[in-house]
Image (cartoon, rainbow, N blue to C red; front, side, top):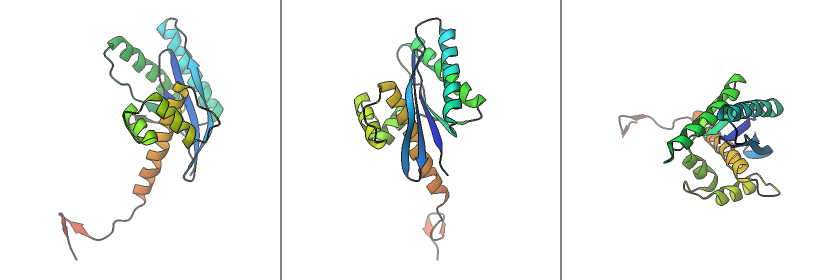
Length: 177
């Protein structure tokens, strides 16, 4: 069954979003961009993120929501603001009845680039190649698309694992005939 995946790269000033569709083993680009929340009062920025994500959900009708987890930075205030931006986006997804999946930056980079400590330009390059885009997406949009791609790959593996049938009879670490 095809999934439409909304990926979110949260930020208190810029939140990236990317929407892809699974078609068999292929991933198809549907749209992406950045929500510019500005630099005003935090509660206004969070409201902007919530409303924009809700509008994106209405526009693309995703079936699943994938979001990057908060990374711990040395600046506690930045970490708290990032967490609040994530929450605003997640509530929009939850209000729409979407199941929400969270991935660490390392998991996303590993899935898309094959290396968990990849640089932003490497993620952008691979997103462009995987989705067969005509140009390089903006960094925040590329990160959101990478999050959606990570979920697409993870979901496919999970479904494959559920459908496998055990071979042989194994009991307590020894093969039994």
